[in-house]
Image 1 (cartoon, rainbow, N blue to C red):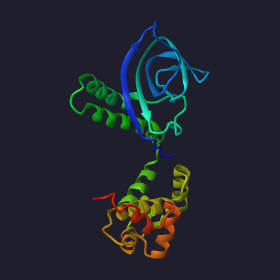
Image 2 (cartoon, helix red, strand yellow):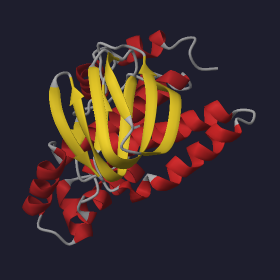
Image 3 (tube, rainbow, N blue to C red):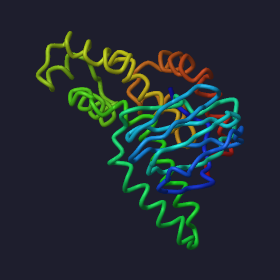
Image 4 (cartoon, rainbow, N blue to C red):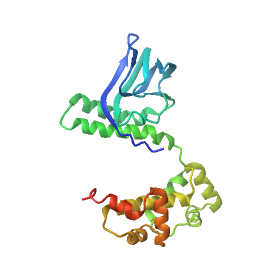
Length: 254
């Protein structure tokens, strides 16, 4: 699921928590992410107890109640706000077994900027936090992707204007066409043809926003030979016709 409730980081700290550290019972008006780097802690979030250890990521939504204590823990804590508290960040209270090694350089960079507070530091920290959130929300689920899946996606994105078939892709990858299609469907929960169509429509939307081509030209530039099929497909996916989409972006691109 795509997360579009854009976050704004308001606080960052990397700390060692002794046995004296605790969070008293309170409802928070921000979101809190805690990356446990070593040790352990006990949280109560919305009356549910959690024992967290190294490699766990704690996510506490705005409006939630929290209590915490530890016998010793090193962690990174990031507080942030979201545009709409009714659309929470799509993470459970605790995500376990997260490989934190690829997050460490980002933590270090944010810490460096946050403590210096040179000109533009908030903008840079926000960009780094966005990358952390991306990795947490999406990349953790993509680590074990088959190289075949990556190859299929790469080829489609680079050749979406052309006539792409499952048979052609399977031949390029030296796979059985049926197996090729089944592998992609199992991994991506959509068929190869559905992925091709989505890439083409996304590109068409970009071209329509630029307003440099008419609808027929956009259809041809994105691999659609039939303008009526293109229009119907665009409307089915984008919920508006190509012309309506183009007109709705009349003043958005200079």
